[in-house]
Image (cartoon, rainbow, N blue to C red; front, side):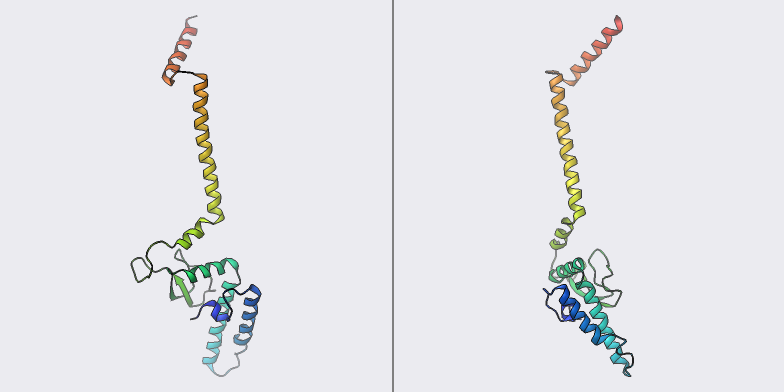
Length: 184
């Protein structure tokens, strides 16, 4: 099976309008209803297969997020082309193929037949640049900075109010004051 760009006959830098126009041309040519009256069952099945391929390609290429993920997987050498029900990442199946049986992108199993061994830096970078990750990172850095500031501030307040005394000496002086008040 060809790639989605080849299926629709567009360049990888095609605009959404070009992708939509290419899909409409393929849909008009290969729609199953157009071939319903054909006496050749093989021709009907082939037209239906080509229409599903075009639908899958349009579904992926018309959405910016899915297209970016597809392009990333297309460029990544740590993914291999396999025949499966949908194309998916290594983390699990995403229903990008409308459930049709088409080719898919899956990470090769560890230690088996893959050309690249190690981390998929593209996916790591993608995960690290998601809004949720960045918000959590910012929030945790604010909390950590606040805790460090409070720790230093508490120590400074202690030293201002109890110059030259350790905590134990301060507690002894408090006990003496309490004991002196009880004798009066």
